[in-house]
Every structure is written in C-alpha cells, then in structure tokens.
Length: 276
Image: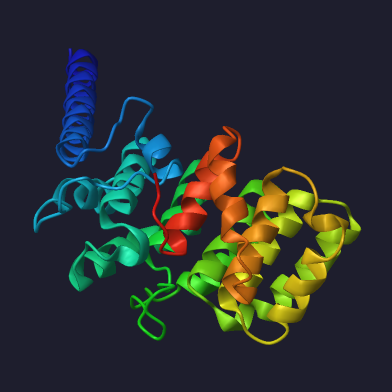
C-alpha cells in the first residue's frame, strides 16, 4: 500500500507540473498573440523572423515570459526566453531595468548550461536584448554580471553555438573580443568555413574598433564577398555598418530571397531601416 501511495503521489505531482507548464505556455502564447505576434510556427520561430509587436508592450506584459524564464528549466524556460526576447525587443527597449536585470541572471545561467538548447537560446536572447543600440551611441543596457565571461566560455563548444556567441559579443559591442574575433575571422577564412567567417566579420563590424574598417574593406574587395549566400549578405551588412557605402540596397534586395529573408530583416532592424 505505501508503494502504491507513493506512485499515486508521484503521478499527481507530475500531472500538476505538466498542467502548470501547459498553463504557462498558454499564458505566454496569449500575451504574444495579444501583441500581434504570430506563434503558429513556435515562439523560437517568431524570434528567428525578428517579429515585432504591433501593439505597445505595456507594464506587466512581460510578466508571464519572465516568470517562465526565471522560475523553471527546460523547454518552458527556453520558450520564456524567446518570448521575452521578442517582446522586450532589440536592446531591451520595451523592458524596465528591473526586468532586464532579472532576465539577465537566468540568461547567463542558460549560456553556461550543459543543455545545448538552453545554451543556444540563452546566447541568442542575451545578445539581442543587451545589444548596444546602433542609433544611440554610448547608451547601452546594463550587462548582467558574468555574461561576457559566459559568452567567451561557450566559444568552440560547437559550430552553431560558436556562431551565436560571436554574434552576441558583437551585438553588445564587447571591445575585448576584437583580438579573438579577428583571429577567428582569418582562421575560418583559411579553413574555407564561410559561415563562421561571416559570423566573425559581422561581430567585428558591430564593434567597429581598431582595424575593423581595414578588415571590412579587404572582405568587400575579394571573392569572399561574392555570391548570394548568407556570408555574402554578412559582408554587405559589414560594409553598410562600417563603411556606410550604400550596401543597404543589397540587404533590401535579399528580402526577396526566401533563404536569406530573416537574415536581411535582422540587419535592417539593426540598422534602423524599415522592415517590411
């Protein structure tokens, strides 16, 4: 009888947890839908496509995503992170300083997680909401303690996370990352790893210090910039970001390319240009 009781208790506990998770998910979906975000393809998909709320994010709107992000683990936390990233927006403009600080603690933990999905989500969302704004030089969200160290630590764990760790370091304009990013850029080029080299170039352009202009000019003038893949588009972004040479037209044209549309939308949003 005691064994049966414990089994029944465990079943009840699991049912309660499962019900709580479903309720939290429904709450997050409801908040996103209320703000004009289509969640049919999943919350991560809304983040990928750089979806922007069509109605203002008012105080309290971030409560459900923040609760999932800070109070749970696993898939629910990942969904909470992506939802918070969508609603808070680039540079966390729709979130209060207190909400950003609370989210930051959990995101740093996710970046250092042993779970790859959590690590990936934490890295991507942290980069976006703590990004140094392109249109407001010198005004940046306060970075959570340990974020920079966590991003450096995650480099080299695997190619996909490496890509987003470089992206995040570039978005927050971490100047101490320039030597490492420059070394990686040339190494990836020599190894013909175009995608990773393009990611390093993006980050270098975002930081913009030191020899960034010289690196971008070199990339723009050789075969590395040719083609219509994601890397060629990254070169166009770097040129517009650093040289402001009109390459934004190339980015706008890429909106018609289904394989690069999301990438182009992200670049345009970052540059403060209209995003259709």
